[in-house]
Image (cartoon, rainbow, N blue to C red; front, side):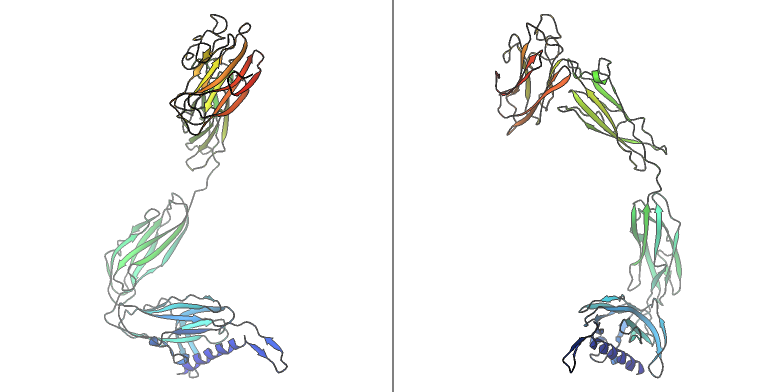
Length: 549
């Protein structure tokens, strides 16, 4: 036939073009290299109509196929050249040719009810193989119309006739239904979170000769989409040409791109279930300005003094700081949530009464700086820049020692030895947990009947990590002045392996005069920390040794 001669000529022309990419030696032994060229070849199984070496006699021959079944032909396009091959189009067309074999008329057949293919135009690298399927799913029980072809256009034939491969096949059996929808998918675009799109309707119908029986209709994502009405098609029979409508809306709950699928079950032989793809983007509504955090600190302090005169713990009574975030504001008037973060003084074991309340409080158990940071967040999840409030706990006592340690379960005890007369461990000349807790004057050091020169163990901790504090409001002068000595006892029956890190802070006249960090590993052992001369304030490190110089 004329068509075969045309396709054969085109096939040979493509082969001839590839020869231009070879190396040619002239009579003068001069070598010339031509431009790189691609090469086009197409093949499929001989059982389905391919004739090796004779493309003009080849075709896609499906033969007789039972209605409702699917017959496939795997097709391969190869590029044996030395450059990339661009495949420009792969279309099922209805075409006629004149008596010379030239194309007289061509029309691309969109949505053929029985013929489809999976080919996609694109680049085929040199030395590569690209495969796709031709599919025949008969629904009418009759032969395919004459003049159907797969038209292939690629870069080697874009200036001449395409390659036309004829398609033949016949259906046998009862007519089958063919479900379809218009549109086949829908993009809702961008919808604000919490809002609902306008309704979108899909026409679902039967394009085949057989009776279409639709069963259930469902959505795979009911969080972001709603099937408003599917009653016109669900559990309904459709003759050829019948159409019903379904309606869907998009109400995104998640930010970003969202996809969903309408799933329609039916007796369509090759599209059960039938799917309609949905997509859209959830986007937060335009937000106003973020909130502003405002935080303030007040103190009870027991003395009514300003922060610089604030007592640290005295006589078992630790001051409390109160923080107020209720002055925080939101420009749009939204309710606010609170998040407080504490950075405590060194050695403190205190924590905020609440990290999410508007008005938390804090026990100031050691001297030093306590800093809180407040961030407020509104209902749109907008957060403020942080607000910071700082409390400085300064002891009013002239002599104060604080003990803390790193690891709990290892009980440490703070001891302070009297200056004059010189105290000895675990006697009335030693202030420690057994004789010095709770009340000023439990030990009468210095001048008789005067409590300001007496020691007091203000805090004692057993199971935690401290603090423990020993205070003297005003150490005695002569003849009771001299060298006070500090040591730490690792209480027996509690241990931490291999050692526990210990910190001792010494405050004189309200100022941190010295910090010591050391390790204790021996159970029921004493570690001598330092000697302090009163009233000069001279401090000598003992480095663990009793009676240090």
